[in-house]
Image 1 (cartoon, rainbow, N blue to C red):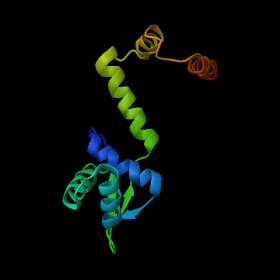
Image 2: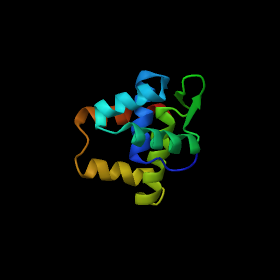
Image 3: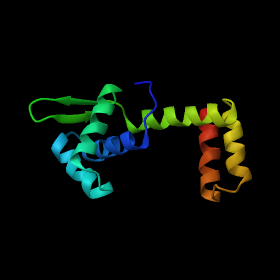
Length: 119
């Protein structure tokens, strides 16, 4: 799965990550409750996820399963953000977060600890 996921496709994946494999019908019910989608809308988005190889659907029961993990999606989205907004320089993203004071002191301490672990 190398294609970009849209917000709607991530919503389908979020339900599958949180609740595990579900039938397309169950998935449609959950998304109707959470975001107000019709069954048709959900089925269309499921099909797009299948086409992107992010979700599989098997018979019997049209059981849908996530083929990619939450961590994989986070990593790809983060890499794309860093490339698009910071020319591939992750340190510029961190500098922007620190400079705009968007990180709490606890977050800064966790970041320092992670940097030490990576070294």
